[in-house]
Image 1 (cartoon, helix red, strand yellow):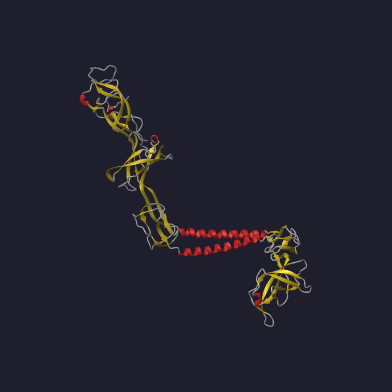
Image 2: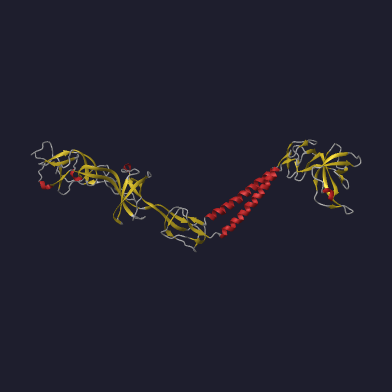
Length: 518
């Protein structure tokens, strides 16, 4: 608590007993206009705007450290590069593991698609007898999808003749035995020359015919295309006949077709369910994620081998240089942000209400004589510190213009609480109890007062005061003279608040705080 002791001369030996005093017992001073500033004073230690000690996360040899103590570095600039060759091989191994796990997971997902069995081609469903609840094993034949409406036949033509035959050309196909002639269309001419017994060179021509209803794969036929006839007969086959195989095991949950149905390509025949496959998919997914986490961890660790500046500022300490070998957890360097300096004052609970953000502060330092710095209150912390029954609150002050100041210096700070310009004032010692001042009078006696002979008391209204002067709001005019007793001080009058200059201790909140205007 800040307490200001205003020591006043004892003008009266005992109020109530008037005494005669000689003029040489008083000093006469005039009321004059002055600037009065009320401050709270304290001391503190300067700190940088921000500071950071860079720590090593990994061990290794320092490959580069392109800075020195005193250098100014930018945020995110490279400070150290540490040898990471061992970690690089770990990352490559982790990348391979992720790739393998990814492929396995994708294969498992493809297997999931295999639970839905589709027709490979259009045609008639043959050899199908599954029902819901049946168990299907991987590789099991599910059905045959046969396109019996279109038949094809491969016939050998002379190699020279085949060179004059083209796809889409009409063919007359003669069925052996019945000699029935049906129309066909060339669908393919092989480019490969085959040699028949006897040395005849031929090429195979494929002809498609529409099944009139009675053609079977066992029937043989010959064909004439334009002026060219085949050398020997061939056997009809179905144009499309797909064997449907189960690619994975499972239980039949739905059956969508029946034997004899005519369906289109990709029609869903059967749907299976497999808890085993789902477990395998989940396991593959988890394995992939574990591989990814391992890779991410290795890559994150690699980031720790290139160490960037966390803040912009000045390097005040460098502990490792290029070529040194460091261990994880060691401090590499310390950086101060000196864009401004700050300090903390602890203000007594009786005075804290007078402090607010934005108040100007005057800063002086013994280390720099004759220079005054300007600061400003930037924070009033309500988390107080109690010591000896008195609570003090930390107040943060920022100093922007810091030429000559350094972190760690002890400085004095005056927080401006009140300020009045060109106000009427008299010395504090001129004011006695009851807000009165003593002035000379020509009257021989002043009835009803306890003033000494030749003097009288004048009532005044006071305003703010500093250690030396007090503001006069009424009762005196500029130039009026008031008396201050010259005798040895015998009485001490303790006046109340508000704020006079006081002392604060930045490190240990002081019990001696306070002040006030009488």
